[in-house]
Length: 68
Image 1: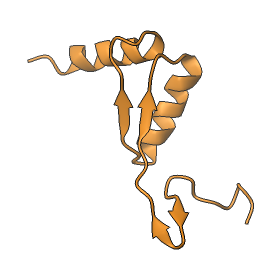
Image 2 (image 1 turned 45 degrees about the vertical axis):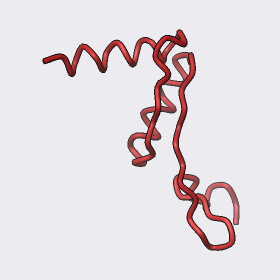
Image 3 (image 1 turned 30 degrees about the vertical axis):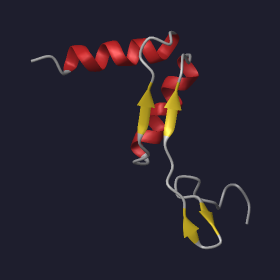
Image 4 (image 1 turned 60 degrees about the vertical axis):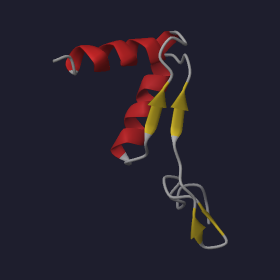
């Protein structure tokens, strides 16, 4: 099986599915694209606020959009 055929969003070891999460610390513009892809594949994303870079931009935007 090639990388093109493997579904990396649902990794398996010995036929058991392994939970996956994306952790973002700092990051850059490429990280934002990768995070979007993870969200579209329904992979949970953790953003470490205060670590700088894209993580801070995303956490700021999230807080602004979710203010009550």
